[in-house]
Image 1 (cartoon, rainbow, N blue to C red):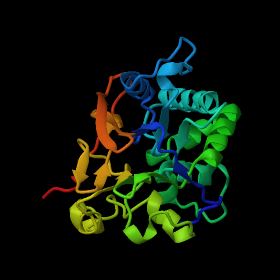
Image 2 (image 1 turned 180 degrees about the horizontal axis):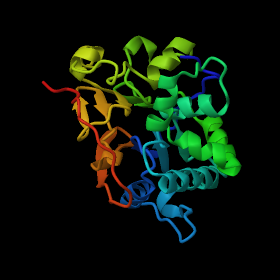
Image 3 (image 1 turned 180 degrees about the vertical axis):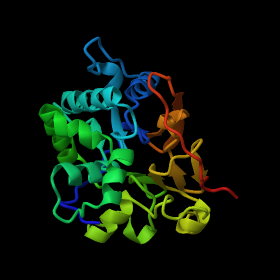
Length: 285
């Protein structure tokens, strides 16, 4: 996979509380509800209110906030994230975005990446998996907003409270040797793992055996999304928080405050048609 921009990363302050949200996929209503459940208020114009309640809270989206949802909800999602990204970050950074494989692929389509070979299968995948492309191709203003958010997004983030409690945040699971590295290969591994659709019939724990084989009994966590699951999946220090909201389940977050890790979820609100999927469950021991 060819990547066309430099890789950004950040070390997060240990003074904030972080609401780390899994794959949104155009489920803006659920995103707003999950934020409200965690102390944020949203005004009639869709802006997150700046008040004393959230002065020490930050939001992290783990990538894949686009695609799979319907047209109206994808547009709402991009607009909500765009205006609140700049709104919350006007004095200090309180809103972080990670690149997901869907943002990366949509970027390649709309920027006419010369390394992206356009075949009949590629065009089929574009319509089936990357429906944001058609929306952005027809809406210059929305395309501009997406490109700005893409450029602002990080490859990985790291939180460190102490030697005994930390978290590295990536979109996809990967082998430990790639975590926090900034070469092209590591970036590719942190954004997308082996495809389930290309390895049908293989259990996820067999396909991605490193996820549990490299897991350790400590609180130096690796938190990721990407692998849509029926619920939060945690094994030792490996945590997947993509809980399949666009498939009609829930939108989930990991909450980090000092040296504590907790979780929260909100159900699919049925304000758009859910997609369908057969689950290949992680940590299915």
